[in-house]
Length: 555
Image (cartoon, rainbow, N blue to C red; front, top):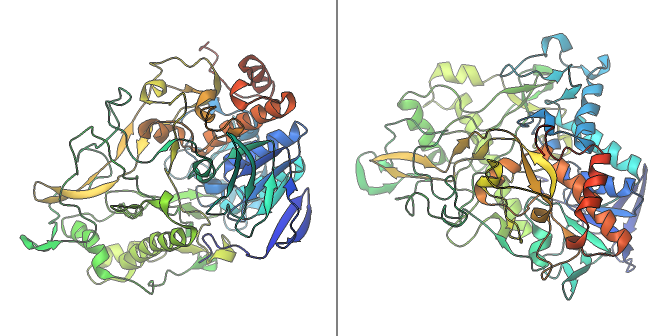
């Protein structure tokens, strides 16, 4: 499993289309005007924008592959409203659209059999010339092209787990990587899903769910058992059904842990967005994981016994007869409760521990598919339905066909002078320094399972519609100046749990990344703290570069 595995003794730099290998014992620092840490779509967008504005940019890639979730299986893009897509984000989806206009792009499936597949959503929108569905390997190619054309230097490596952020007072002067190499810069961008750089820089953050009272919200905190993706009624929570003394089955808590609306430190569930196919020539059969534990799937067996026969995972089709397979129901791909414990969560784990935890998520999902395909406790009709699918042979070929990134739906969230909340997403509170827009439903996946009225129920799922797109504040991507005055955070930004549930869409990360790259350029040019970049000038340049800061009818 190569989830986070990297070469320990060398770095590969990509400058334009040229690669240079640098030995780890080369003590000279790599110097740039902007250093972007994180290879997510937001990181790529920030790096490309600053480079296009004439700056020396280094992008540090912890995974060795560019694009984050956009190139790691999330090929069915949640947008909300395509009117918010501008700038580099629009360019990305347009380039993918152009790729699929070529006959050579359709090597597994005729194009005419692909349009309007899945949930009735146009896969290749002829009107806007944007693609909202795509193969991960094509997304990675586009990210690579954008970086190469802009002349960004890419360094494969990870932040040192101790003293990785080199600070002088409240400024980052450099970052130190695991093997000791140092990257110096004038401005930095933390584009990780977890907020790993800003945590080391001493920037304030929150992990978990705030109470509804904290920001005067209605959709935050513990939700109770009324959300979506719920388990069917009748699943007994005890190892011996009806016998509480036998103990709870795997993955079930005795209670919710607090009243509805109260906060906690739990995280919404993660999963891999597996890329599956039923084409024999491109299919890798699912094998039983080496550490397979039948007891881990007891909820699955009991859900089937009380009547569930489908929706165990999604088959959202992307080009060439592949899928973006996501969670689909109360018992599905989400490894609920697998990313936190009583005294730990994903963000507190070391890199080695994250790799171990990611492997557990991987094996849970592969084990679920294998169970549905082969286990005798699964009805034959269900086994027949799921047996044809396997991993796609021509995706993630250097990682056993598993996506590079586990879907970190939420990790740390920065706490700055301005916290985006549900009320901003519902346009109930004004934003006068917009750097982009979001437009997706307020969304959270389930967070825990617990005993409710003698049955197992899920808790934490929220899918609450909003009236339309909303502005996102520049102050939400800038830390407090007293904490760090030359860092921008377009991904793990300042937002409440429920607001982040809408903001955390890949197109929005690209939008905010471009805006961060623009602000970084202005801070470098005028030697300013990022908090003092004049918004009027920032806005003028963002509009010049086709960023959508509000819809035409919203001033």
